[in-house]
Length: 251
Image 1 (cartoon, rainbow, N blue to C red):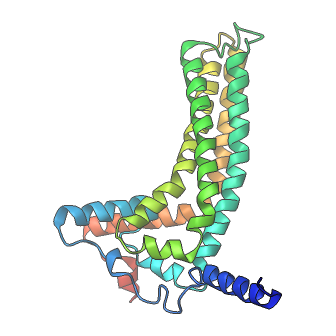
Image 2: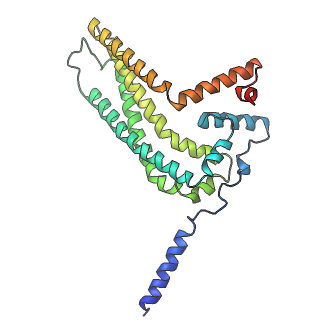
Image 3: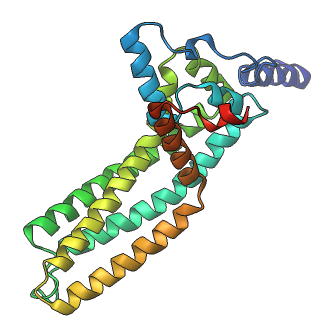
């Protein structure tokens, strides 16, 4: 029969073995991963640049390396993403409930607001389906977040050039599905309003969407995404016209 001291040593040794693979090495991300460079073949290189632009809004992955090599940026970014994803899941549930209520109920004023017409009902049904699958994808990503949040998963991802894109695609799919479900619900509301036989409903709907569009435009003018997008297009236009970018002029 083993003594308590022997059991303690075995347990401590087993804990050390479990914690060892998750301990990040000192040189993690110190050097730019060679596999993150653009491939040399013409077609593969342009596909790589297109993927970089779609997922990161840049032409390479150097900025991502600069971001991840500082401290525990990999863990912190994924932790923030999972927190935001939980909030998206809450809103996704509200969209699902709203679409389900519209589909399963008859309009009280069918002549004025008929949301069971063919076009509106189709959009509501699609919004319901996207919301349902969106919740499933969000649950899957949240459940697997504990795994890909660790540095050991990051070491596997950077071993191949395209794994980082598959990883980013897996993170962005729930957001894309959520956006599609919300857009379909808004389209159903717009179709219902503008197809109404009541002039008052059409006027109120136009005023409401004009006000909401103005508020949304004002809110994104000061966002970093708007400035980055505008600077990107200015850089592209200057490059196409033969002008030197502003950075080269200042230099």
